[in-house]
Image 1: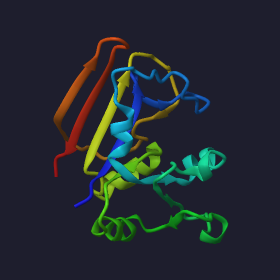
Image 2 (image 1 turned 60 degrees about the horizontal axis):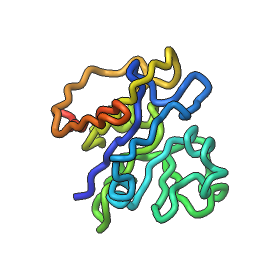
Image 3 (image 1 turned 90 degrees about the horizontal axis):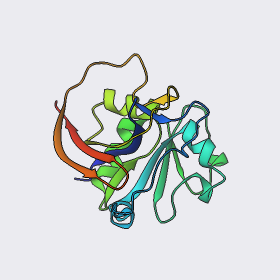
Length: 171
């Protein structure tokens, strides 16, 4: 079955975007095979806020991937070329049954929170970037319910000091 993978960069103090939504602090380590990472996905999941912020770039999605936006306010007719859904459980159930690659939960913290609460996240993959932002969009918005994770993989990238951590939720 296709997995929903939350794969994200995070500052050492727990933010996935800076105070003004910036991501210029994310370093691209030359030893990370971004082609292989991107090749593992054929579907991308976005929340409304992330979709609207990226809408000018490739229509708000990722080239070569199907895009699903979860929103209670967007209308399908206003978002050509993507799927708009207000029902993550039903939508992901349908997508997971289809042949394909893994599903990238891309944005943002609120969508991650919602899907985690519904137990629809199969993997939490965080690349910790050695920077302190002091504020911004947290990895997991408050309040959130307590949940345990089990470490399945890790890697240190010495050139940039990035630490990649992979977990699965304990259910």
